[in-house]
Length: 226
Ligand SMILES: Nc1ncnc2c1ncn2[C@@H]1O[C@H](COP(=O)(O)OP(=O)(O)O)[C@@H](O)[C@H]1O
Ligand SMILES: [Mg+2]
Image 1: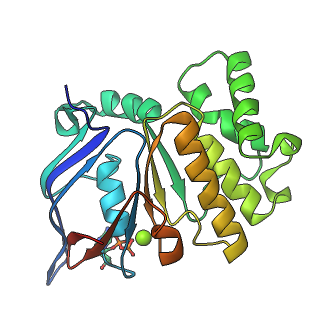
Image 2: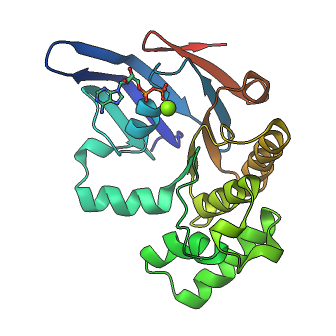
């Protein structure tokens, strides 16, 4: 059994179009330990989102393998992969991807309801997570009634509600001002410590990245330790 929450070996991704092949990722190895926070920085177009998509099993590598709890995801059926992803991984994006017509609480409970958790239990859990992210008084607010920083905190609560081993966050602070970006980052650190969740965070912001347990730069398709 692997001690790594998430691992990739010799991960490569080539995008083909009519005339050229773009080699975005070249033989990337990464091992994520329980409860560690990894930051990845890199220029726009360097392949950061591509890497997160591959690690999350949302896209298929050209070469190489991804392992969740030591299991090669290429060997899973689509159903197995979806059900494991729903329980095991959480996702946070720059533009939160919340459902605007639903309340904060409904958005946070969604992964549990999709995972067939009893609705009453889902609500209790959702309320607990929203309280942890400081939104106890916003449970019934629609997403459109919340500020940018609050929406991002709802998105973090949603990513964590199913108790994932690892959260994949793609520029989660990219859409926020400095004050809110720092607050959202501190929230990640706090949740990672209390819930023992691993986090892989892609960011443009070096001040934030430098506070991670490990920092990598993605350049020319390779992950370089900083
Ligand atoms: N589906 C796709 N088809 C072709 N090229 C793509 C696709 N997705 C991304 N790319 C290219 O791969 C490179 C890396 O993209 P991306 O991973 O989104 O970078 P980042 O998140 O670091 O800004 C870019 O040059 C982009 O144009
Ligand atoms: Mg990106």
